[in-house]
Image 1 (cartoon, one colour):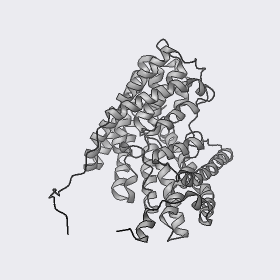
Image 2 (cartoon, helix red, strand yellow; image 1 turned 180 degrees about the vertical axis):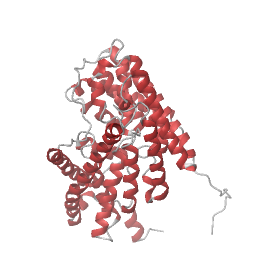
Image 3 (cartoon, rainbow, N blue to C red; image 1 turned 90 degrees about the horizontal axis):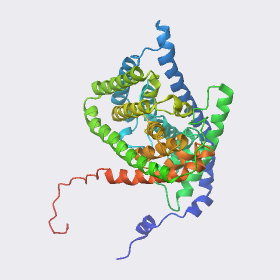
Image 4 (tube, rainbow, N blue to C red; image 1 turned 30 degrees about the vertical axis):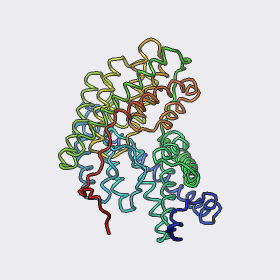
Length: 451
């Protein structure tokens, strides 16, 4: 029996050209551009607040209490307080503080406007007090949530497609400059969300427009306030050697090691996460204390600052590369081990994004490899960033771009080796990943057709 008109309508794919030519799509573009201004300003304010609180808690407060500097043990009680605040936010506010970072970078399921305060508070309590997570996931959720709240405030009966497009544009605006370029942020969201096919441009264009507007707002606020751009940047990049056979071998090795390390970080976080969910307050505090103890161990053994283990690594990647000569192989290996443990503990209990810690740990590991013959500093750093980034995010194109575009002119030189490291790490990560458990069903096959 032929399908009826309603069924045919549901089955018929949307025509992207017809959508772009429609008046409603032009209105969506205008709304994306308009919303890009306040959302990017909010994102800038969020990043500025986190940065100022970090400085206040770890620099100003110890001096105000009479210490000559920040004591080595300072992070332990501070991160215990972070655990209390995050646990209470997750338990009592709508939205549970955002998605679980141990489950990867999620871009779907834009939170409601009611969940925005909880997402912001959980992220601020995590990031500003030293948890090893990044700001990208909270910003994606905040940007999308604010945009969806705005469109529903203007038009309560807005169609779901319009709500989804505007929500995506809000996320684009929120992270427009976080990765150093609006194109990198857009590519991250595009690959993470799985956008493809004829509808890709329909959704991507409003997002790119919002990201462009957001980038301009970030630049203007930086000039006006003088606080900083709060974007990932590498100011001092040593020259890279042209690829050699030895460097190719190191790229393969880095990819293999990164996949194993990334899977260990992920599995340990996912194993702890269910226990934390059952006993949210005490175990979140315990994970915070563990991160603080790991930072204490690092600074006691190496004499390096606590910030090596604490925080996402966004603001310390550049100084690490610029000051690489001051780090021995032993110090870098210890940094990779302790930062990885702190990263896993943070993923299991707190709120934030998984991107920047993976890049920092990978970069530190690549610098350790560069102490051996056949691999220069910049190439080692780049292949480490790309390899561990893809092991944690499973976004190969984004990780190749992150590891090369940020290196400026040196990125073109190292790109072939970064691609090798990323591909090796990505393939092995997929092979190591545990297969998804099929959902259980109580129904047994009977061989009969229901009436």
